[in-house]
Image 1 (cartoon, rainbow, N blue to C red):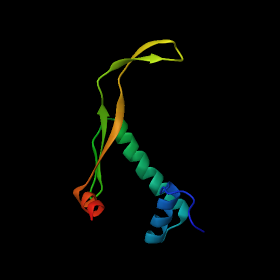
Image 2: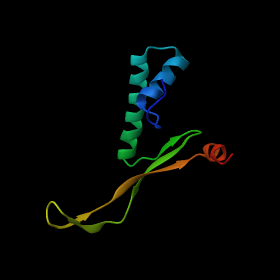
Image 3: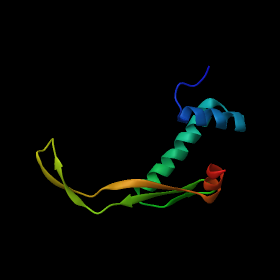
Length: 97
């Protein structure tokens, strides 16, 4: 049956790990969840996450500014943060080919 969405999900990754390592699907999901949780934890600690031959994740902080909150009906001073991803040179080469 063809996939309905165009995104790879945790379930898809677990299936690929299960086939490659010949382990149970439950164990494969646990491995994927643990791996992603570890990456998320390090990003939230503002640590640099480098995955060899894939890319790097960083927590990027923007200058703080004041924003109007519709819910509170007042201006709020808030620091903006976002996660940045920089693909490795190997990935960049494969994309451009």
